[in-house]
Picture (cartoon, rainbow, N blue to C red):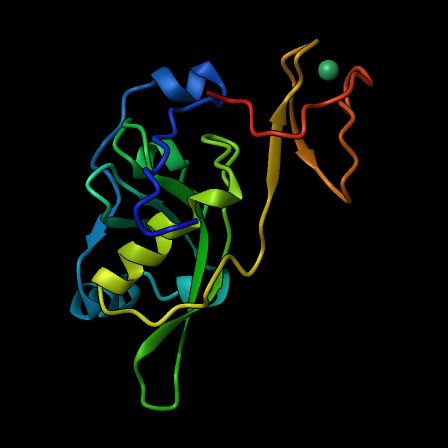
Length: 171
Ligand SMILES: [Zn+2]
């Protein structure tokens, strides 16, 4: 994928009762390393547990506590990416990304959303891996609409045994 490839806007596809309920402030915007230091100081459990993140439509990283819903972190909006992230201190005391995934059953983003994550982290000056440390493959069943997490290339619906498409299909 080239740097010019347009990014997909992921709309919320999770349970309607979560999508429609009122919500408070979106996740904290992390525009630089000072924002990250401040956020981790306020959320000390995140160093061990990780955090919920989205990349908003402006391409900015937003963080919320681990068990937050991604749609709350996004302020109810569509996103360029969503998942779980964990930071660790490097030898020079700066925080770096230790683990990052696209695990979000609210948005079911394709692993191809990585460039949005890489750019948001680079823009904030945070060192990161070159891709997701764990990539999740989501598919909606064309027969029964069940959201499936595909494992080991097994493209079969867990609810009804229908075959799942090879391409991401939440658009
Ligand atoms: Zn099915």
